[in-house]
Image 1 (spheres, chains in turn brown, red):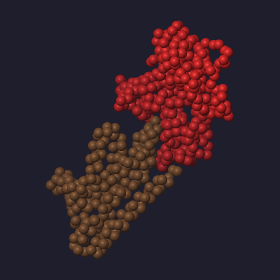
Image 2 (tube, helix red, strand yellow):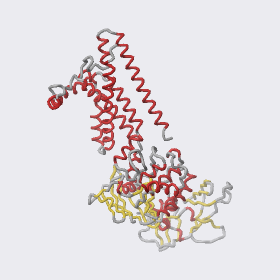
Image 3 (cartoon, chains in turn yellow, blue):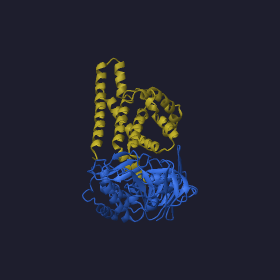
Image 4 (cartoon, one colour):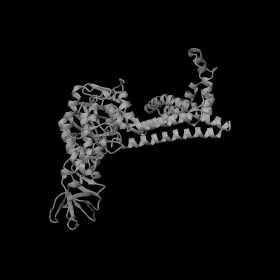
Length: 223
Length: 354
């Protein structure tokens, strides 16, 4: 069995979750603090849309942006001599875009669960907004935020549609685990497909165990 | 320090237009829920932004709509005691108290040297010894309130704002904690504002009072004076006056109570042209024996009686409420209601519509 799809997938999911994690928390914090309800809804819609679009459609938009002849793609090619479409980078971009809404929504939900009086109390007690974010908001929402991270990691690992559009299915380069399953089935190698499937199921199951563990720990803490 | 507040704010169909002043001691804002009293308090703390108005403490301007001054909550030096106390669940008692002092030493920062000392002082003052390392969830309601007060008073705010401090508390704990808070307030000595819907609480803890309804101030002044002479119908009702009737003036000191079967009553105070109602507190009626002859007699007629542990609530035939003390062991109605009651002329409150 060729292990490169597993390594590529792990590398992609790890890097993408690191990016998504911080972007998602930042976006959630900014949206939670917004006062205008109309703008809040609009921004929320834009940030969430990759979750409800078919992945191939999201991938199509990405291709329209990062293709070699497209604005962002051309920009990276000219100024950094980096070709993004159909490179490993593309798998990361696809995974980030597709997993971002999960991270953002989990973090936002977790922030909104924090008693708003705590934030007001912190303000009257003289804490700075940054201290409030770290010590009040994030600390009291940590399990929800971490849960969002696990979900985002799992989503990044399982990303298929957008990756196929933007990164293609190049063996040893952009062939992630889900791509490998597809390729093996298409080639009629069912045994090989089974092996990849087993690996994915094990990793996904482990992610869910971690998620439950986080929730259990947060319920036990501070009581 | 003197707190002066003039606050205007619209929120949906509700509008708040209130002005009040608090000097040394405790000012009570008494009113039903949704009357705007919490919103007023939050405006002072900077949690809610008024549409216009002006809020000053001493010579510091916290908010001025016209001058576009809106000081941030963290700069206002206003201590706010939340209904639910808002202790940080992830911090110990010590850490909670230290927040207002800039925090205890942690992984990322060093505490100022005097912080730990001040925290220890507050722990002692609020009888929290032994609980320093406990988390809020391990504490009783009373202990949580003490921690919240210690946390606020540790950094010596200019004004202390108390938002319904006993609403989250069981009734039997309330009285003891009220005494405790009374001592804390006396000891604090600065300016405090207490918001409540409980008139006993307001009467017990506040030397001055503001009565508020529907976002308007109905009356304000010395607590005892406002309770003794509420002036308006709404204020009388809010201070707990159960009996209020429209009147027809008869003489300078005599009225006809239109809502109590056209009862004629002699009053101590003069009937003024603006007097439209009178009020009599339910405790102010006295029974009279059959032979006694006094003014302001009220026939009792067929009564409805309900029994409370220490009181009888009697509704007379003409609609008047009368409360009279009883022993907890007595359950018999015999002899509770005499043929007639009377009320002293000086107990009759002269009220105007608004």
